[in-house]
Length: 504
Image 1 (tube, rainbow, N blue to C red):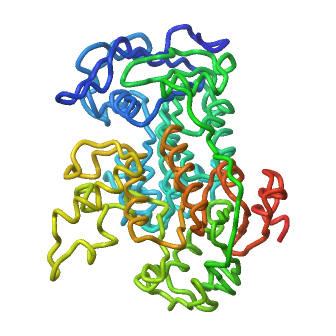
Image 2 (cartoon, rainbow, N blue to C red; image 1 turned 120 degrees about the vertical axis):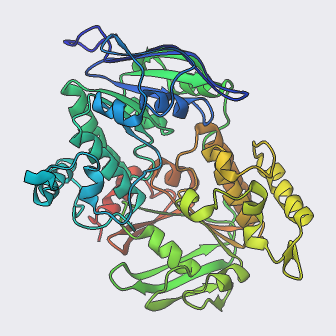
Image 3 (cartoon, rainbow, N blue to C red; image 1 turned 120 degrees about the horizontal axis):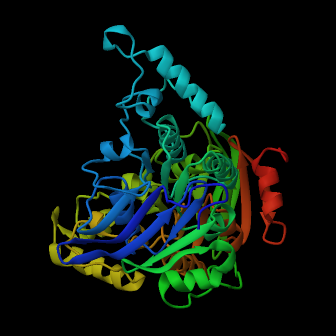
């Protein structure tokens, strides 16, 4: 159905598109229409075929069968550049940028404004980049290198890149995965403005509430086939949508449990890193899940890294079971029973080229080695134990970990650190970019670990996840703790009030 006032001819149409990779049938006769003026949701679990469909739209893959039409005319993109030239912009889940180039250079890569003699007009390029970020409401310096920017800022650069190309068809693949609710709301306003200007947006997210907030229609993929074709979001309730996605009812997203807490296991007192965070004090008890909330840039991840010893701190102490940890020493933290599941599993949690079993054993190499030589049988046994316990869906454990879906990659990172038998588990964005079924599994795992007496510090940009999982919620704003809320006190309003500095 075309949006009112727009042409009934779709801006983009896929007709019975199929795609296989060797023996794996990724797409099976998929049809999809995107109309000017609408935001269309594409839903499905990891492995359902969403990424393959996006890559066909963006010119990375060619379909084995079926047609792609732009404005009613068949097209056969030979490359992503050709798709971009025809007005298609794809914002991928994992940003791909040149880390040593400036933000502005990344935004205008391949389309730099030129002066006479075909020289790059850097002043104009930087000016236009600054205007784009002002439009998005994000204070990013166009002159700074992209290396070291947060995932949230990298996603904003990708969005600016799409805006700069005047794209009429914009595919957003998990653009809010690392954004807080305020940043996501800002992005939604921009998306709606683009749609009202005549663009067609395809929006992919594992956050169901975002689909209902932003999208007009939804297409659901399961096992590479369409199981719901462009149905109005207003006519499909959340339970029905989840059943279409997974093909079965799912358990409760946030498991119910009675918190039974014991002694303080992790005690952080006056932790300070100049210019990053200041005077951070909190504790986590045995059997307790403490949520750490705040907007992107508030310092949540930086505190976790300092507690674990990756980054140094200038003042304050960290005690685990009464023993002070030396600053900047991750090995001492691990030996004391602390584990950290990092925010970015692909860059910080895994070595993608290595096998599943090698990644699973990286934190326990000493235990699977004999005289400094890794014993393959011990390594495989360790990986198999945690693959079975976490329900890992994979081929061979010798396969590269890059071949796994996002949810299964996250299970490998969790298994790697749980194999160290920690007493304190710090999890930073544990369900970022994974599907609803995998989220339920991760939430159930964390709840079970807490019930067994583990102390868990949960950092998440998804406020419903923090509220649903945490027994207590700490809130940060600009490097300071602004609230320590009990479960009864923690609401969306109270957390956001503190996260925006209103309670500071």
